[in-house]
Length: 243
Image (tube, one colour):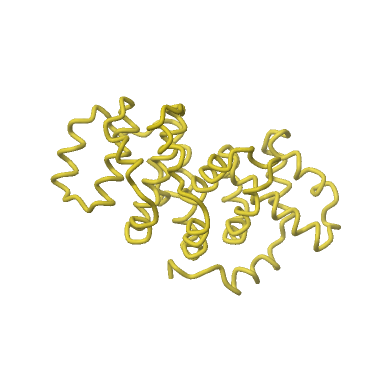
């Protein structure tokens, strides 16, 4: 079921999964700067201790936050993906993993959650609890009203994240946050941000299809055909909820 937490079966898979072959493939097919923390472990394999294996899994989890590695890690480590997902919050306060901005750190973890949730629906309960224990993912969008600046690329990824969560389950995410900051973007000059924000408003407020279509018709943006980045991401799994 969608709401089930990661359970005993996932733990058993984790213990039996041989991390050596996929780790070697990941290192061989990635920029060394992206996997530099992983390399020392691959050089020691298969002679790694239980503690080293735990550290290795934590490193792999952190690498999920790198968009250039996400799809590769999902393909290579699919059997233990639920475990890697549950390790993501441990990177929240590690400055070397992310950066010094707690709001931006939450956004990066949230973006990764939103992309992978369709693949690991058993982690829904875990992800919901994470959000209940942290500040809103829209905190920095709220600050736009006070004159603070954010790049369009950052804003776009935030509204895409919100849209993915709603597409996965309106019931679970409609009441998770105050959607006012997202609604404030429905007239944004960037057409893609405007389109995504209006999609979020339609889903969260339960607009009829006719109303939703009427809103979209006034926005000069067509989400299809997809751009190169989105096509690459969709090839990960054809049921992932990318725009």
